[in-house]
Image 1: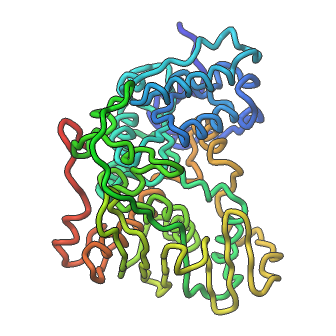
Image 2: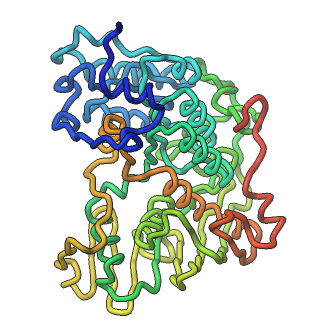
Image 3: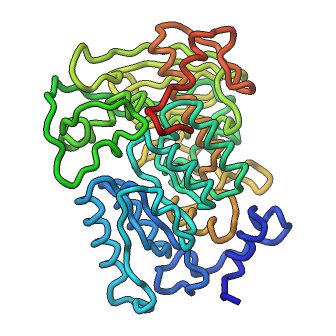
Length: 440
């Protein structure tokens, strides 16, 4: 018989995680080591789809925690060649190099997913491709690490959630901040009422950007433009749709990132609001948003915004761009406040930050790296720090706000039914069509 690891045998034999069989989770010390220290039978073999700057950063992180990357895929020949070079340089000269056969490259993600030797897939494409590729990966039996946000519509998030549940794969959403100690501390302090009863959350992130009109250009050699567009409407190529400079142009085009930075950046902080509220399986009941849009030009998503969310427990969340609130997340309670960013945490009174969370109080999921956490969870079949339901719900909150902005009015939401209340027009905006032959 072909020798396979215990992990792979259990995964293939049951189609579910070890926890479903009542088996204990075994955390090996090698899980957080380098690839060369992990036995071949215990390596997580990965393919990476979408290897632009963000995808390559994620790839390096995953390899650093022991994942063995054997394939990369991108519709840009230059991007995949650079990724292949970086991957193979990572393994060059390391112990066990003779067993590493190199990194294959693909233009079409379906060819990568057809490989039986790949356990898990990183998906770091533009947003409009996240869910179609992720669902295909799930159906191919791959565990998935999906960059944020979770698709471009609420219906896409629902479809991926259903697929992840049905096929029992491990899922990680790349919102990052659940693996940052200061955010976990802030949310634990709020959940344990160190600032009294939570009343208001204020979240702010960078706003949108605008540009002028850009005429069609010849498609660069090595770029599969039709595949890049995929499920989005066909349009002529122009460079500003993809990479005009420091920021990717597609971040601010609704065909590829339906709400711009409202979900594209904001989901990081909205996810923290949801975590602190204990709302990973729920959401707000009332939404009222306003926004300012470019008057013309290629980029068409909102530049500035202010969205008020009301939850069933009375807590109000105000989510804006940085011009209206201070960057980060601020929790305000009856007895004080906490403000947290990626580089700092502050509180009033200051003593709040010295508070010790007792053994019988609320303790949130603890990990130090989403990359390392994903690799370990693929091995143990346990849930990641950013699981599918939380990913879907946090992304949903962003899109609820954007729909309110587009309609220009207050909306009411049923988080259990995941429908707007008595609002057919708003409910039609929960999904959108895809260009043939792509579909959910």
